[in-house]
Image 1 (cartoon, rainbow, N blue to C red):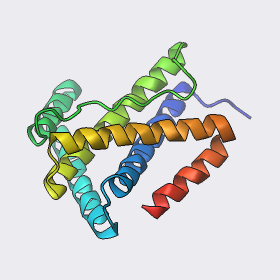
Image 2: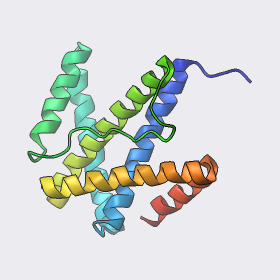
Image 3: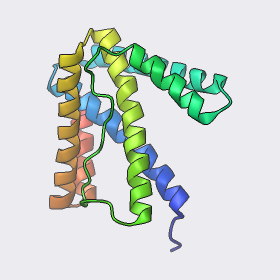
Image 4: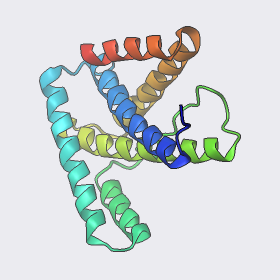
Length: 171
């Protein structure tokens, strides 16, 4: 079997980070804040709208750095002061050491951070979450990532993903 290129590994890791962040936030909103299906759907609908707006803002600008800065400014303007700005995913395997591991870790953190920001705006707007609740949500999301990592180490990735999926389905 041919080994995946670094570019493909980064793309896969980035997509997984977005999906896992989405699931970790959904689980936290359900388990910590008691949101039911209807309110979760409202938050998710707004998350999709916010994501669309971010993409629209970025598409308006031809230069990637400026596009990112414009999108970040727009997101920041919608968040209460004191809201965590980054979501740095805990490493299951320890500290990244090789060039490839560092590139993948950077892509994962970047993707998770953008997903967190979009979700945080949706929670602030739909649920009226202020900085305290968003900080509590951020902590719960990180704890969900730590739990997933612990399951992966203890029981293997397949079992961990099954347990994690069960939690997400229950939310």
